[in-house]
Image (cartoon, rainbow, N blue to C red):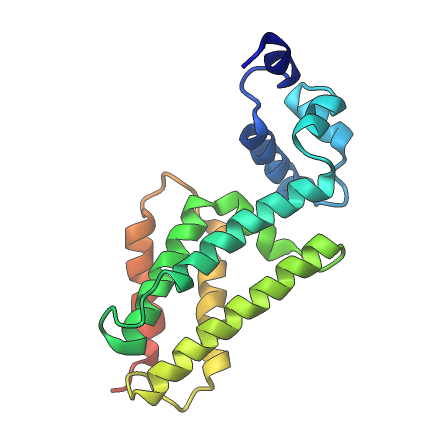
Length: 200
């Protein structure tokens, strides 16, 4: 990297990912609309132009953060092979565990994702992707019901929403470094969600 390129990167320690992390924290604290590039520059100790060197706009920062969370959640479903064993119920369990790990690993970005309301094109795109993800989870619950592994007296979409409502609530109270790590938390979620849904 040339000296000029190095100088354009701004203050040491704030590469694109560093700026993104600080921005996501500010969006979660103040709200996306109330957070300006000027506020981010002040918080980072950078000039606005240093931020614009990495991101073309505040919307681009939001898009990058939401895409990170959504891509990780989508990968949990997409990377789950249909023939991995345990049928649809086994796949559902592994997806739930994977989703818990995503929330713990990307807590700030997922928190931001769960707070978007569709006020911008970026937010509307994110909400559309969330709906697609929700439909895939509902289809997995429905398949497990059809296999006879889960009780079928609860609508599949309701079961999926209640289960992910519980998982999504983690962002409100979970603190990294606490008593429960992601593995134990995933065990607890699976026990509460699937034990209540399994056929007796």
